Length: 147
Image 1 (cartoon, rainbow, N blue to C red):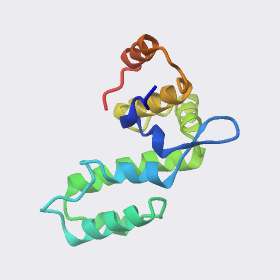
Image 2 (cartoon, rainbow, N blue to C red; image 1 turned 135 degrees about the vertical axis):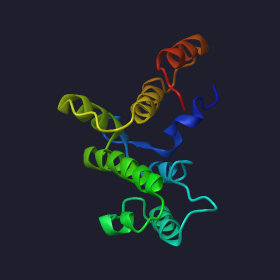
Image 3 (tube, one colour; image 1 turned 30 degrees about the vertical axis):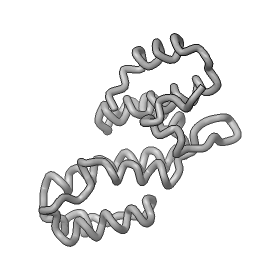
């Protein structure tokens, strides 16, 4: 069966010893390519420089001064949201660990869209090797993924 749900980002991840999805640089880079944080024509030099630096090293520390140097307030806010999500992923080390921590702590501080994306890729991992197209379609419908 061909790779399914390619847009989940599963292909950007590898499993750890438990079979959980270890956070990779390529997976983190995919978030810096999202339209919410990808520079546009009107983006200032500071925003472009920060974006380029994060594409080169998606785990690099970002200072408050770097964020404040971005001229557009919405862009600054978007970077903060993605950085908060990235911090959760990096702290946990795996998507499953980040998902569990999010709900065990009871402090949901990331957008629902990021939770949906985690569910999508975790479910993709769980279904790896499944050959039943009806099961895969049912799982896709029940995952409530809004990629």
